[in-house]
Image 1 (cartoon, one colour):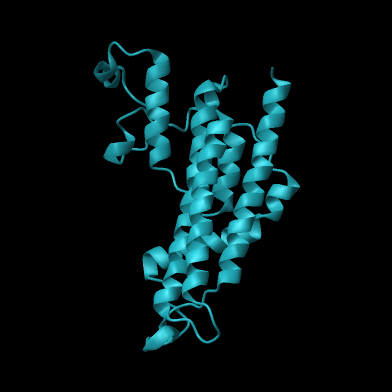
Image 2 (tube, helix red, strand yellow):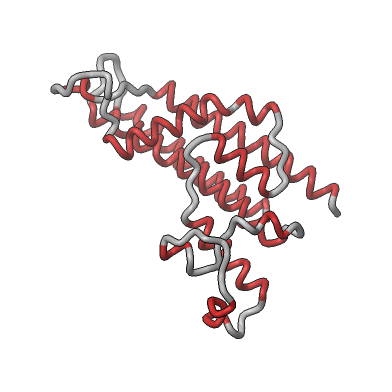
Length: 212
């Protein structure tokens, strides 16, 4: 399963590299970059965050259904509840009628899939919580990645929710209305995602070997 997760992460990571290569091709030469070209870097930042989230959800989807400790699953609402905006984890017996004929494992898996589909990671605190929920020890090398990951997540939030407006500046014309962004900065975020994922993968492979 981990090999499949890594495969899709690598495919998404290649998309990030392709976007950066496209930006480099379009902006050869010196001089100030246009906001249109810089929007490629903003798009890359959003996809970078999505790539990290997709990886984390995939790991959780792999590990959560097999957790022997029921307390790890207590945070997951019964399937159907998350879609209605109800995140309550308690339910009545009648709520199970819709799932007659399904096994307990099937209901658990469907509940987890729905829950993870609505989960987002808004900071590294969310990431730590997710890792601990599946028994992954957050190592120092992982924590070393957090400053840049937090920076990337905050920037993605500004891009998505504020069109990357620079709140410290007065609204005006040209690039000044938007926060500055550079290829070097975006590369640093993407490289940090790769370092973090490789560290988590190493931990997962080690624990999988120990439990065999």
